[in-house]
Image 1 (spheres, helix red, strand yellow):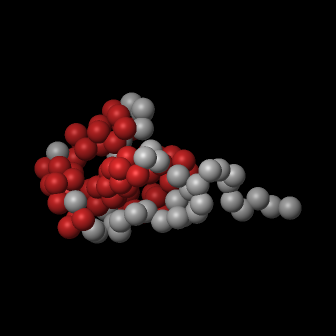
Image 2 (tube, rainbow, N blue to C red; image 1 turned 45 degrees about the vertical axis):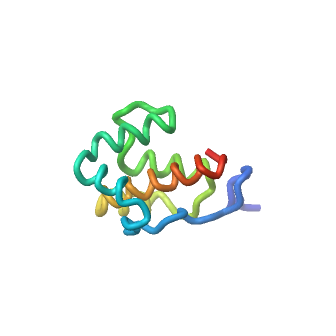
Length: 104
């Protein structure tokens, strides 16, 4: 019997905003555009990781796995590699929404 879903406390879901939903939180998008490393450091801090780990595929994969968000390592790699600012902003928006919902 093959395991296709990781056991966890969250139902499978998608990110709460789209990759290019900058209008959902314009402040975060400006933060990511004008100070991308700072936004990454903020994400890493939220997730109790090293400041250098806040951007890119690894942090996105860890977050997706933790909250049972649909996707794959390949999708994370392509998204973070081709659209790094958008992917990082999407991740921060999702973290902020989960904090508001009390599930972060």
